[in-house]
Length: 446
Image (cartoon, rainbow, N blue to C red):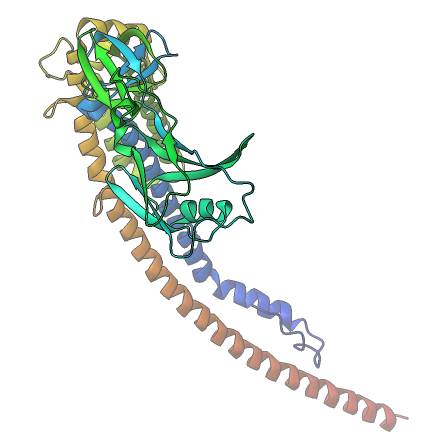
């Protein structure tokens, strides 16, 4: 509260110091309340840290709680200049011979008619239109009386353009229009028609690739064979599920073998992340119990005991493994969790399904059960939200009390100021009277 500098001017007494001392005593209840508010705020913040630690642990656990997390495969091709392969969770281990006869092409057309320039020569007459079909879709542009450059822009800027790009090239004969489909394959075969005379005489630049004797839309498609006899035709170079769960990106003609294997590196990475998240959670629980959440020892111990219990007790899932330590997750003396990669690899090789079941079994899977436990603490209306709501309600009540105490202190200070001002005036008056009487007595004695 502010110091009143005029107090004591009349009497010469240090009334400001006296006022400050009295107000310090009066402020003690408010100071105690504010100290408690700081403590409650720290608890709210600490519970936020706890929620964050639990959420991070749950996120790491989610990678192991789903069966799809263990259906991770990698696909490779023996010649990546021919194609690259990738696998989804529906893939299965195996090998397959693939021969790419040809990759899909973009349909390209060039004008047989050339022009002397691109920006002055008008083509056709007003009202002439050009319709361009791309597969089963088509759009129309006005071309009559426009220059070659203007026609190019009209095609490219058409709001209903269905997938073709126009450009201009300049060769020894002059300037000519080119059209190119934006996507590959027969589904994007380009055709043109005109309301008036044809000013371009467009013809395909693509060639016959299937031995039919002339170029047709079918020549634009990719063709490949599986195991030398099962043919697949594709309108684009991304071929999905020719082998279940495998996608092929075609690059060139050639032959090789697709090999699909379990991606044990990704599984190991997920298990390692789980171990690291568990260790980080235990460290956070210890830190919070020692400092910001000293009064929540029972809650924190409960969380730790539940998690550690899952990691150290037997789990019946019907496979070869009952303890996570059997697949390489081990508890160290300092309480941290580490992963023995060699032991995990051996477990995956000996009983892959058993490792997966240890985490994903719908009834007893460790990750599934831990996820349910985390939900109890983290979900809306869960334990931690209830704790936070309770603390925030306390803070709200304390803030109301703080406002009342501050208002009361202001009234008390004002009362003290009035009393000290009156005292100052009285003492000043008495000092004046004393000085007068002293002077009178002095003059009488002469």
